[in-house]
Length: 224
Ligand code: CA
Image 1 (cartoon, rainbow, N blue to C red):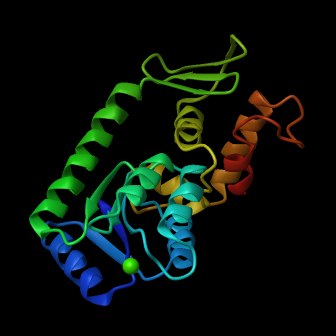
Image 2 (cartoon, rainbow, N blue to C red):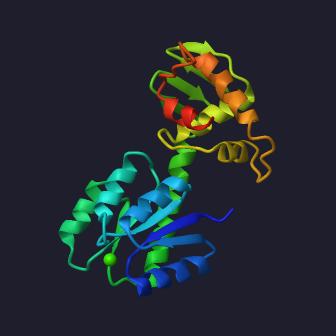
């Protein structure tokens, strides 16, 4: 599946050129022109990377970056003004992963994008075997889940679902997304089956399943 990139840039000529260059590299690309649309779009769909201009109408790139960082680890490449040393520092401080000063060449931008995606893949590979959210620990290699050091018996399917949610805490998943992820295909079958799995997991990890309090509650709540 091609990696999906969101471009946030209000200058149409630059947005178009970047979109063209990234599409030519085989990426799936979408573009928005202001900060509010960027937040909305980034929350609505999962992206593998954001190319984020700093100077935007409405919410600034810095503000977009700051807010997204509170809920997602998506790699963010900032586009900054040529002499914007302060902008660069600020961008990195609020969680941007890298920056490219304007004007930039397309080969340079593409190389930075590729480098960030590569780095993210390596990070994922290293941390893939154990996931921790609060008292909950998922050992994906051993297929074991512990809650406050007590073993929790989960089915393989439940473990996969929990791993998906725990891997991106705070992110909201639709039923369709969850089932699509778990079955690794676009066939999603009966989305209601998802509710059953979620309620089964809740029964196993919540003190009171009717009032979920575990760190996963946002992701789990969003599913039904
Ligand atoms: Ca701009």
